[in-house]
Image (cartoon, rainbow, N blue to C red):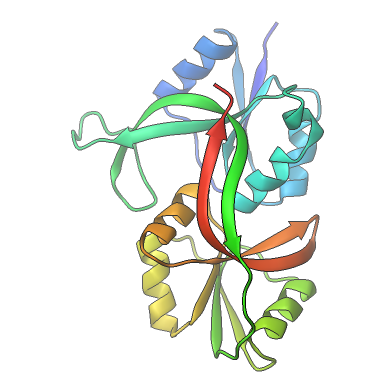
Amino acid sequence: MTTKVLWLSGVEEIPSACQLAALRAWFGCKVEVDIQTINKAERQSRIMNSGRYVGAVAVMPFTNLSYLLRQEEVRERTIPLLYAESVPEKDIKRIEFRSSEGFGRRFTRFRVIDQIVKKTERIEPREIRLVARFSHNAPNDEELEELRRLFGRKVEVRTDSRRFEGANDIIDRMAAMGAEEVLPTGPPGVLRNLLRRRCMPLQADTFGRTTLAIYRLTSLDLTYRD
């Protein structure tokens, strides 16, 4: 009987040959990888918990990953949610893919994600001119209202829906806009790189389609079950 692993991604991305080999070693040689390009966390959760899959690979923004880790099937370890680890690679013959920063990377292994460990700060309200959002989706009414509460009724919230090439690209576009704050939708690696560059991004705490709060991210890491 063929088993299926769900490859959940917000962008068009396919597993490398080494990643496919690792999945077959984990789940059996007959495993099939079902690639789903979906942006909404709720839809990702419904598909992942449909009972058709023995595991899922997370290639998604931080907020989506946080949502999925709150689901019962993941918490109870019924469905392993896998994260692909990789290392820098300079040998052009061994480069498997490029990071969001454009550097060569080589896949090493999959690990089962346990939880996200993050530190946040409360945002002190102040008036600013512009918040730069990096997202494929427009802000909902609650998010806009919370940004205006924090940064003044006249603040402009400008969304850049183009795909970015990593933390440096976000910082460059933010500077070009003249934005004082940034709220990016991106994977954990990009957010960690922003933090390394001393750019502490805003993040929206959501439940379904409702924005509950906006906070400042100050540190971020993943822990694993192995």
